[in-house]
Length: 299
View (cartoon, rainbow, N blue to C red):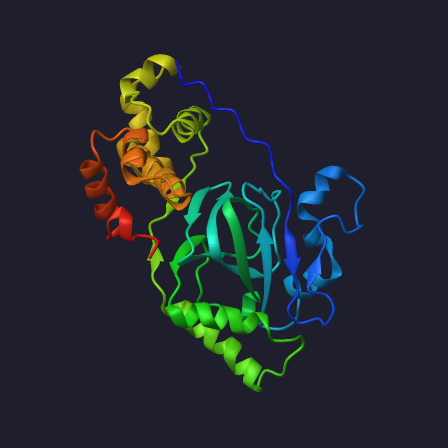
């Protein structure tokens, strides 16, 4: 039988939105009046006039800052402009209908415009986001991906947050924004994606693995549980995710491990909790996938 899902934690208080360009408006309280429905409070900032000023600006590039409480989860939403989402502190777990991405502080998430997504915060997250008008950078990715964030790109994002709107394209501010776009084109993409299949049976398997990454259920076990030939399950995994069952489970474990490590867990504890026989086996697989040992990933 599939593993019993672990209970979800309650959602903590919502976001504080930081406006660095409007005098006297440093923070917008999370309960700012715009919708009496309590469920909407988690994303109050998204309906504020100041937020929309960035999200739908005619400027090629805009940037804003927002701080989130640990465990906060945004509601599914989308933006007309593309986003480069970067966390100065904390880890973001970004989800869409196509899968899940882990975004540590030294990385960034590229989100094409019009993509419905939601974000779960691991630790207190200091999010810094650049919004990019679709026609401003036609060569940028058309799919969600995690990007490396260089020291220069990080500083450009921070500088962009302080630029008031509107700005002249040929001004110093306009040139800084163009340099930000140029730098995004140069940074590498990273393998921090866990694809989500559309097949109902595969989703049942994947959801169970995400809930319990240490599960040792085999393809044969899942075949017996679902009444499907294991070879059929393997073919469906390859077709829908581009991975074998084993590769997908390995990726799920590694990304879950990143979350735990980001929260301060010890490598030995994470290795055993993820189903590895020893810390060295975990470190070997981690280095093979990410190019560095677990102890160096967040440096």
